[in-house]
Structures are given as C-alpha cells and as structure tokens.
Image (cartoon, rainbow, N blue to C red):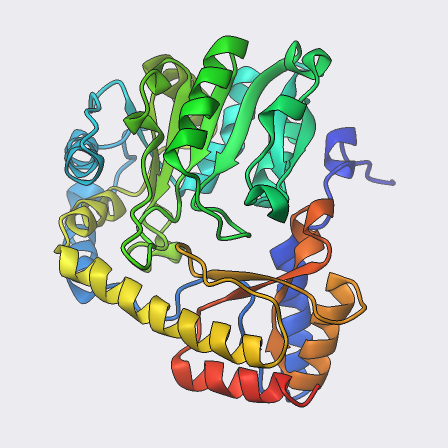
Length: 386
C-alpha cells in the first residue's frame, strides 16, 4: 500500500533546522571538528536554582498527574507580575495569559483557531519558518511581506494590496527579529497597531528575544502601544532568556478572546504542561535581574568579537542591538546554501543559509552567538583561510 500524505503536508518544505542537523551529524561522523553557529540554542546551562526548583517539584507526587490545560494560576500570576515589572503593562492573569509548551506551540496553533480555508495570514520574509508552515497546515494562504535591508528589515504595510487585506485574518511579526536581528522602533509599532485595527487583523507578535538587548536597548511590548489589546496577542518564551530551550515553556498573552480561542485549540490537542516545569518557570521568572545582565554582557562580547572578525575579512555587517544572531550579506558570488555548505566542508563551521527563512533571505547568512569567545576566535581564523 502506498501511503499518501495530506496535500497541506506536501506543501511544507523539509524543516530547515532538521536538515542542518542531518548535515552536522554527517560531518561529525566524518571526524570534522565543527564550530556550531547554526541553530539558536544557548550553550550555557540553565541556572542551578531553576534546576533545583524542578527537582523538588518533580519529587512531589502531586505534580505527577495531568496538569491543567490552561496552566497553573500561580504561574499565570507570576507572568502577570513579570509583565508589570518589565513593561509596565497590566494583564489579567486568568483571562489574558495562557502558558504554552514553548512559544512555538502557541504560534503553530494560532492559525487553526482563526483561519478558514483560503483565509490569508501576512507572514514576514525572511522569518521563523513556523509562521508560514502553520498557516499552510491550517488551510490558510500565506502572503509574504518582504523584510528588506533598505527598510531596516521592517515590512512596508502600504505595499500590501487591498485585495489581499480583504482576505487577511492574521499577521505574524517578530521583533527583536529572527533571523535579521532587526528591532522595531515605537513609531513603526504605532503604525502597525493602527493598521491592524483598521483592517481587523489579529496581530501575532512574537517576542522570544525580548530580553536579549545590547547597548542599552530594551525591546518594547506591543501592549505599550495604545489600542494593541484590541487586536494583538504576544508570545513569550523562557528558552533564550533562562537557557531553557529543552524545557518547553512559554506563554501567549493579550486580547482575552484571542487567548481563549488559542486555549480551546490547545485543550483539544494536548493535556497541559508538566506541573513541575511550570513551578520551575515561576522560579525562573523570579530570577534576579543580574542574571539577565550577565547573559547580555556575555553575548555582547561574543557579538563584538565576531562582528570585528568578519569585518576584517570583508563581510558587510552592522552590530545588532538585540538577539544572539548576526545577519550578514554573503561577500562571495554564491548562494546561501552553497556558502554554508562550503564553510562547513572547508572550515568546519555551521551557519544557517538565509534562503531557509524565505526567498528574501537569499544572499544572507545567519550566525548564532552560541559558542564561547575561544571558539568564535577559532571560527574567524578558519574563515580567513577561505
């Protein structure tokens, strides 16, 4: 019997990071010493006090049962307190906050809550692949908004055709941005909220990198913009902020009707987050500010080292104000996949081809600052011999 996949699944390309992982395994099997600047996975451990909190909670049999689909009230209260402290934004813990099994889970489920067949979601390009893929899997149609360097990697909202806007239900945006490291100024966010309110578009604002800022930059919440709660949901994650990528804990927050709809999808697909992880999440959110400051200082030092090294080698690059990525044009006459294959084979360096994030990412490559300074120096040295 020949197994036929759903038509929607056939439209989805192989997941970028899975393909990169296959190439890494092959290279390591061949004995190559790889310097992995590919996937954005922190190389430093989860803080010990968070691990200890998980251990204590995991030892309690009360936490071994099914968790609440909507998340522990104590966690939701702590998330509300965090938003109040960090952004001066007030959220109702019970109706405007939904804990998630990582922010990706909520992002991927959102199109299922709002898109009917052939409805449009506005998707940035280049972008995190989940926005496009979740839209397609839900039966919707992605309309790609180019993020171009000459517009500071912000979408030009005026260029979206009226015929598209009539069919549009959702917009995905992500600032601080992956993969470009761009940040969104407040004036753009004000324009964005007005645009979404006017066109009755649900804004899905992904802030996975909200706490990774340099040179005194602090990313704003969309809810610091007047009117945003009418149309927006914001996604946050503990993955990058507290080195908890494997723990899978994040949240959606904002408009209560949007949050409620995502919660309904979630309750029909999973059975909640392991309660011990939620308790550890509460501990993480109570972490002293010094940890985040130390983390940002570490990534800034790595940023400066790699930016300086690449500039000397002729790579055109501007130091990013946020995220732990460098997004740079390719200084050679080759496409991004060929470039990344070459530097893996010849230099043992893993980087992410820009085209993997969309067609407007072609001509660029992304480096993640997820190696220590010694390894970054070695990476620059290896690149100098190309």
